[in-house]
Length: 140
Image (cartoon, rainbow, N blue to C red; front, side, top):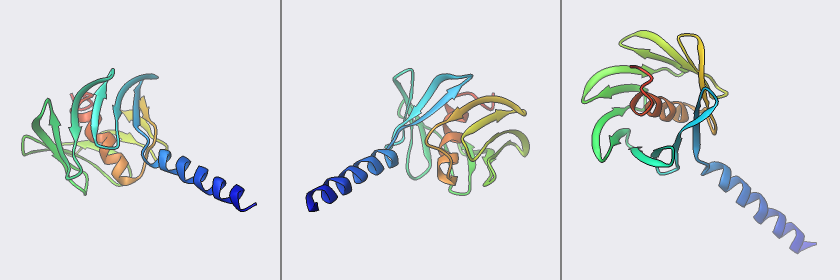
């Protein structure tokens, strides 16, 4: 009986560990678009396109291209670009552009744009926002 309990405990820990370290996938119009792994590497169609660092710096091809602060402020080359608010609203220069819901649904101008799996705490929302703004041309 003790071995069964130990096996069950180990199995639960493995499952929880894989959930916590799961890659975040971002789908656009139902198709896989971007993947962000637990190290912050951003991939498009399996190809590494950049990285969202734990300090908020965003790199594309190794070059620093922007940042996202812990409060959700997005900067491109040091200049204010927009923000993701705690309610999920995405604003560009103060204007509402889209939203990332608690379930990971991403809307642009009120229309369904895509969704993000393994989402959506505040920090995960910031990661999704950084990925779609800097690698998904969400603000363009």
